[in-house]
Length: 83
Image (spheres, rainbow, N blue to C red):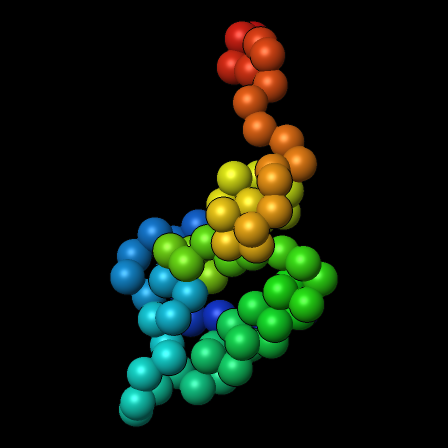
């Protein structure tokens, strides 16, 4: 069942930022709480959030490596984009 997140998936407006609802007074507490649940569940599983999009999480790539201090598990693939 879909839950309230404050924006649609792939909305790139200002409310799509992960921290957009972390203000007082919060315009949508239910969406804020759901975003927090998603953020902490994914973070505890080792994923890193891209702060411009509440739904965007990374694992093993450059953003993840930068945030965690680890080496990327993968990066550029030879032939990528050559269809």
